[in-house]
Image 1 (cartoon, one colour):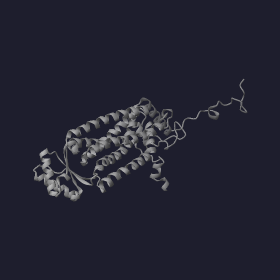
Image 2: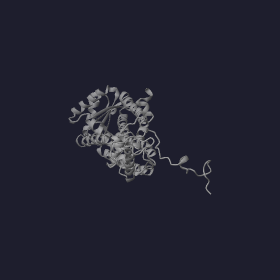
Image 3: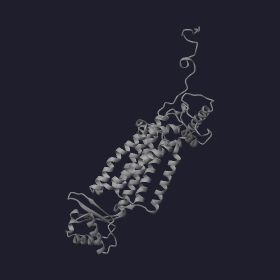
Image 4: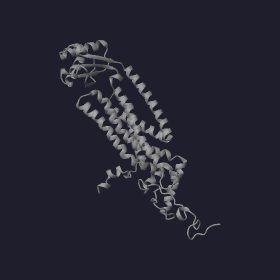
Length: 397
């Protein structure tokens, strides 16, 4: 039936996806991708805009023809002046005086820039004062980078303090690790594909940190709710409770990501693509890539890493052993219990990580089920039998 389909089970938090139990797979995939990104940083580097690499820009009226026509004429002017460089990027931009084309080149000296501007005006048949030229030093880009790195350090420090106060230090470590993974993978995509890095890109990088943090906090809040007082019962390991939290918050995170990506996608594909607003491309591109990666890292990296760190807590280790020992005893018929789970394929003396993965592999309590505690013995929930003023009971004097 449709109501039992995957979509319905996802919305109800009953999909039962074993995300935490397969953390070795997610960590391996994330590790390989991070390694590829780092190698790309070292070998390919980044395609830096003129704000970072230094260069010149020439703006000509859009009335001269198409963008391709303008780029061809500027390249012709650069060749005529024997500059030895070509147009690096060309885009259409809007302004108070109407649309224009901005064409960027590597660094030129003052004499070359003046000569190229005059040659462009001659080739296009317009006045030289209709062409604006600017020169950008790479020192400005270095200042932007330094301030961005400083802002990143301050942001991470504040995030650590907030998460430690709101949750605990293990959650803070897992969240920051997820944020750093998100940044590395997003930067790796930029390096591999060759997207141009501009000041707008740096602003976008800092913006996606806030979105990624929101995703992680949503999941961790549910993890905290599911694991509160977990050591008081022997029905779930910490990893199972964390995995349940991921399943219960998965659709919320997915819906949030889709809703956030729709306007960013419109900004990127409609504003920059169809309307030609090139100034929106740099910001929209990094937001779109970073938000998509943030959803994956918050689900596949943050919570599994938290479960791994918690499994080294002596209290959680002892609790996990009790859960697995009880399940083994139930499977052998030595203990009976209402709502007991099937035995996990692991021995209680395994390492904490393997115990948790094995417990997840077995039949854990149903998603959303409240942990069942032991009922007190005796009549009427633990009241001593034969006492009190009940009919048939002897009064004590």
